[in-house]
Image (cartoon, rainbow, N blue to C red):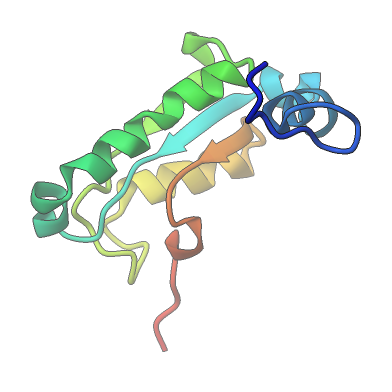
Length: 119
């Protein structure tokens, strides 16, 4: 462990803490879903690093104990606005998988913008 590693009150690193206290076997029995999205085609073209970082979340899932075969990447919504669920097949699939109780964890960037309601 490096001298810059931060330990929590139980003496574990944040990653170890998450693996031991927050995630349970039943989480790993289900899918880890990586939801990759950017709002416009222009963002996809101009901000490729964001796309790479989002795909990199697969590595986090594996670090936390999900096997490659248990990580589902949903990237159907790249370049599609979150203003509506209509036309966002990736979002619709994500909601379906969660509703069917197939998902143990979801990874994504800006998850607060996963869905917005329009008045």
